[in-house]
Amino acid sequence: RINDNPAVSVAADRILIVDHDTGRVFLDDTYLGCTILAWTDNEGATWLHNPLACGASATDHQKMAVGHRTTLADPTAALYPNIVYVCANGLVDDACGVSFDGGVTFTTGEPHGVGCAYQGVPVAAPDGTLYEPTVQCGAQLRISNNNGLTWSALPVPVSAAPNTGTLAGIAVTTDGTLYVLYPDPCHHAQVAIPH
Image (cartoon, rainbow, N blue to C red):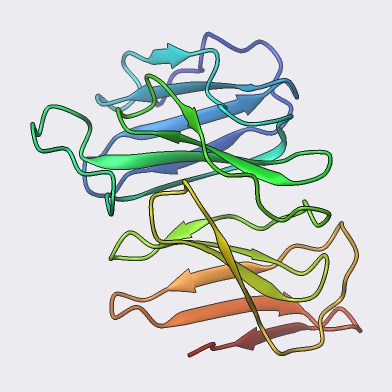
């Protein structure tokens, strides 16, 4: 049994993820102004907390990812081995809080998705590249090769349902192959494999 996160009495959008490299479990709750992040390294017996785990704009429908370091190397090997991301829908763009120390502190990555803020769950590829799918302004992948600090966009040439309530999804295989799940204009599930 995993104990409840004692830092949050009401969860608006609760997220639970596991860093498969370290076994650390992250639990994140939003209160719209930011998020409260908790993590455990002992299967929930004890939790550490960060009540300001955003480093970004308003945090509606926040999402999390954990990925390998790319440009944010740790030559001392003293920091947490992976990068923790808390990404959220802002009012006019997306932004990701980026943590180099396992959730203790966050810095703000570059805002992206300006005018098209509703995004799917970000996923880190084995090489650390961070992908974030969206269909709000046409199907596209937002891509960061430098641990969420800057982003580019890659259109996915498919016809997708464009409303804000519809999310796209993404999966990345160990060899780096991308699978993008998206709703077509009739809201049927479709998969694209961008190369």
